[in-house]
Image 1 (cartoon, rainbow, N blue to C red):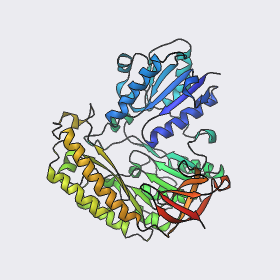
Image 2: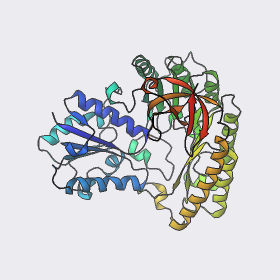
Image 3: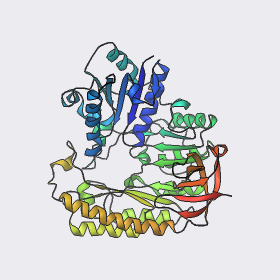
Image 4: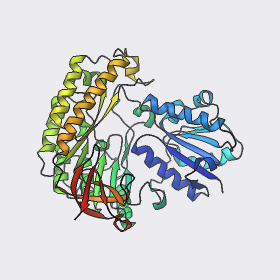
Length: 442
């Protein structure tokens, strides 16, 4: 039985892909292991959203090929870098034996058998098979209590900075009946929380709306949310949402269903209308603010998180100042802030990258400090509050501690034992940490 080590970079879609790759390989007679040093095969599931993430691939392959006193494994590259670079990866990093694109991962077992049989430089960038199995074996999920459920893959938005449409292809929504079936199966297997995921999860548009007609809401996504809530699964989260497709009926669905969690991740990217137009985001600052206002008007106390890029080509000091003002206005619970990184193949790559690296760093640090202040203000509402927390694992920070997430997607640590794992417990918040909360079970 050949031993396979799988390393995953990037987003939840990549994690979800890796879970299905592990499921398929174990089913087909391979042994999935956690120790890379003992592997016959090393698979690297790659991310290409940022240059740093892509560079990790080449560093890892070089290290594997030049390590001493240990066997040199067969190396396979999966994911977005594989899809974008294809056979050129063999020239850029000669240690690679095979490449599988984002929609070819269902053929991983066959490809791996060919590589083990002596064939080299195999590249498969083809389309996903119609009968591709989206399910994940219980033993290969990242958590026994939390499951990712892809509902849409690809992207039609073509924001000028983003490589995802080229790496993941056009949007393709899975049938609602298949999604609901998966959630029901997960509930029966003991999963307490599902994450509906996609590059733009709320852009969900199935070929047929069959089975969703009985649920309220104007958009197919809001109807799907209600259908998944009706399965009785304890908690439902979704990410990532696209502002242009974020409709009021999504908020209505959250308000109407207790098991739809009170957390929305809604990337804004910039607080300047001029920069947003250059990014081709398709929304304005005013439109974004109106969504935020409606989310904050909900009785559910919805936590709001976002992504922001600083130093986009042409971003002036005035543009950046408008982004700072927007962060202060929105009061995000957290923000993922990135310095603009040119990605070959995107329209923005042809623009002049005229914000210097030093200026990007200055803007990053300034915005980070603003976000920390805003985040501290948001966290001040938590001491004394009781949160429902899914106990997911042992805490690495606290002796005899348990760590989990609240419905508003805050990391919460508390004292407890193994008997709490997999259960939703009431935790009263006693202390605020920089990026987490600490409390006690009540």
